[in-house]
Length: 334
Image (cartoon, rainbow, N blue to C red; front, side, top):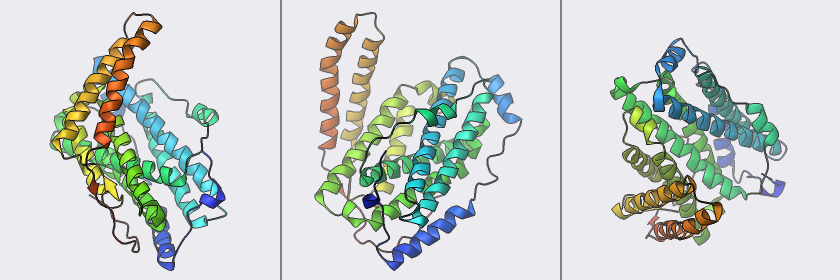
């Protein structure tokens, strides 16, 4: 990712600077500094897990660890590049990278309970940078952090109410963990409000809906390939995902100028149709056909999938977003 000085989010008012300073103090407080402490429960729980659940749980830890470490790399790079042009924002990015590194390390230690470990150093060496405009980073990362919050808090609340499904103690840490995600999302909300040109025109409405759809569809399709994991902790995958999508969308509507109408039953019908098509595409890939035949069989299915995605995007949106760009006040959702 390239980040040019001309793209740097700059303070536009004294109120914005005050908000940035308060946010910086919020991150410096480091509420979770002593939270992620392991105990003997971890290894004992891993030893009891077997069969498909063990395999899918390892995949969950690997994917989560990679995602958190990627966040660490992104925020670390942004902190480094903004150090001269906006030191306060740069320091916040550096502190956010601290949080992501802590999460990744905790997940990687969890993998050690299954006698595995990820080579995070390899990800650092193998990283490649691609140019993205700042507003695209803000939209996508804001959504990523907020949807992460709702995923973690939903799983935490479910397992608190149904302790018989508490198969591994990492979930007990999700209440505090998700607050890191929420603070990160609030910071990106502040950045967007400090750059109103990212929110106040027709292009912003189109991009907002695009990123919402991309994040929601990606999560839904991926999770529906891993129902064993969610069933293993007592959740219905599709119900869980729709709850997360709806709550994320309601949160996002506070800042994005337009969001998808995800509570329209037609939206879920389109998601389910995408899952059906995607499963057929996966089945073709796992078949014994030669590559040429596989590609020919995929063409109509890929076209159908794209058609469903476009139809979901073109559904009448919900006009939303903040009507003013007042001083940002960080809020935590518990």
